[in-house]
Image 1 (cartoon, helix red, strand yellow):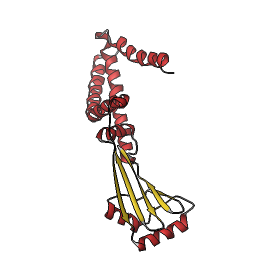
Image 2: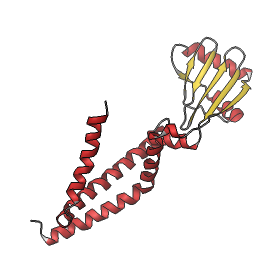
Image 3: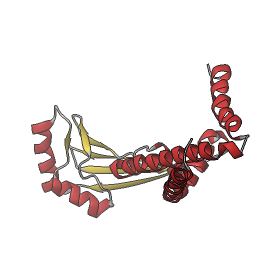
Image 4: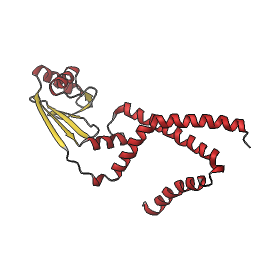
Length: 208
């Protein structure tokens, strides 16, 4: 039997870790809960993508440099030369640094996926014609992609890992607190058992 002193010690520390983890992941938990609902009912929510197209002409010196890069790396994926990257950022406000490119006989293709939409860019190796197309599916699609970690980059991926750890601490400390208070709350374990049995039964009976 746990002594009163030991019980008080664990209750104090469990409550502390429980509220700290709750505070750390509260806003993110709300975000992931809401976007979980919107993802589950995506057919209810209509969105009309907005497509924006920009065109420009790559200056001849930069085109010549791009052709040289193609001749050296046309069998492998590479990245655009730095001067071309800087010019695209200045002329079209497009960030393509460190993006891998795909070569063909007559053009360079750069895929630019993003949360809540998509984008791509091509540069003609013949005349330097640049085409950039951006598809925006709206803020709800953006939030849904944040939920899935789709095209969000390393920083957001790390954030999801940290949030998942904080949520795990919140759940485990909550379970331990339930255990310590269960003797005075007879409905504790039936409710915990229901939380386990319900999704398990739904998965067995209705997911094929």
